[in-house]
Amino acid sequence: MKPESSIQTDVLIIGASASGLMCAIEAGKRGRKVIVLDHANKPGKKILMSGGGRCNFTNYQVSAENFISHNPHFCKSALSRFSQWDFLALVNAYHIPFHEREHGQLFCNDSAKDILNMLLAECAKVRIDIRLNIDIGDITQTPQGKFLITTTQGHFNAASLVVASGGLSIPKMCASPLGYKIAEQFGHHIWPTRAGLVPFTLHPQDKQQLAELSGIAIDCIVSNPRQQFRENILFTHRGLSGPAILQISSYWLAGEAVQINLLPGHDVVSLLKDQQQTRPAIKLKTLLSEHLPKRLLPVLFDNATLDRPLQELSQTRISEITLQLLQWSIKPNATEGYRTAEVTLGGVDCDELSSKTMESKKSAGLYFIGEVVDVSGWLGGYNFQWAWSSGWCAGQVV
Image (cartoon, rainbow, N blue to C red; front, side, top):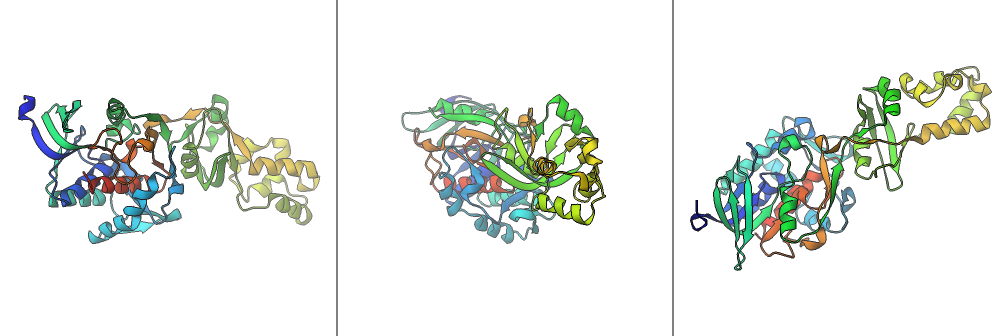
C-alpha cells in the first residue's frame, strides 16, 4: 500500500490497553474518528489476567502518595480530574457486582471480563475501530504535524498519536519496549526501567534455609530506609512474595537488605518479661509458637536458644531475641524480574509531558498514557486508576 492511500483518522492509539481503551472512549464521545492498534490477538489482555482474574480495578483511597515517580506531583491533576469515583460510576452504570478487600481494594465479584466487556461496549457505542495482530513499523511526523504510521496492515495518517503500549512487565502478555522507543525517537528522556511489584529471589544459602517454609504466610511489617508496608509475606520455593514483599520491591535497591517485623503490634520485651514471671519454666519455642509458625523458629534461632526456659533468659538475651523478631534482616539476591512483575518502574519523563492532557511538550499531537509514563502505583488497584485517569485526560483533547 502506498503512503498516499493511507487510512485517515483523527486519533491513532497504539495499545488496546486499559489506558488506550479509556482514551478511545473519551475521544469517540467527542466525535473523533479513532483507530486503536495492538499487536496482541485480543484487546485488554492484562485486564483479563489481573487480580487473579477478578481485576482489582481501583481503590477507595487514591492519592499521589500511592504512586512512584521522579515527579511526585505529576499524577495529581489526572487523578483529581477523573477519580476513582468517576470510574465507579461507570462500573455501577453497567451493574457490575464488586467487593472491597483490605486497604480499600475493589475487585469484580465474578470476572475481570466484566470490566473489559464494559470498556468494549463503550467503544462500540462511539464506533471505535480496534485492529489486532498488527505490528508497528516506521512513525514519522509531517511538517504540518500529521503522523504517518507504517504497519503490517498498511499505512495510517493521524492528527493525534497516543502511545498506550504499556511497559515491560509480563512479556507473555505481549509486553514490549515499543512505547519507549517511540518516545526516544521524538526526543524524550526515558527514566531507566525496572520491575516493580515483584517477588524477591534469595541467595543460595538463604533459599536453602527458607525452603522448608514454602507456603507459609505471615502478617508482617516489611521496611527499608524509604518505605514500609504492613501486609502478608509469603514464603515460596523461589524466595519471598506476598503483598508486603511486592510493595517494598518497588522501593528496593539491588544489594540492600529489607527488615521484617514478624510481630507487628506486639511489645515483645513486655511479653517475654511477663511470661518469665507467669510461666518461667516454659521454653522459648513454646511461647513463640503461640505467635509464629513453628517451622519458622529454627530459621530465626538456634536450638539451644529455642529450648531454653524463659527463666534462664537474661536481659541482654531478651533484647537480642526482640531485635531478631522485630528487625529480621534479609538481603534479597534479586527480583523475579519482568516475568512476574505487575508494573514497570521508570519510563517517559513526566517533566516533558503536560500533566493536564498527557501531550508531549516536544511534539504537538503526541501523547503518552498509562504504564509507559514514569508513574507507577502501589499494589491495590492504583495502576488501573492511573490508566483510567491518564487515558481520560488525553481523551478530552486528542
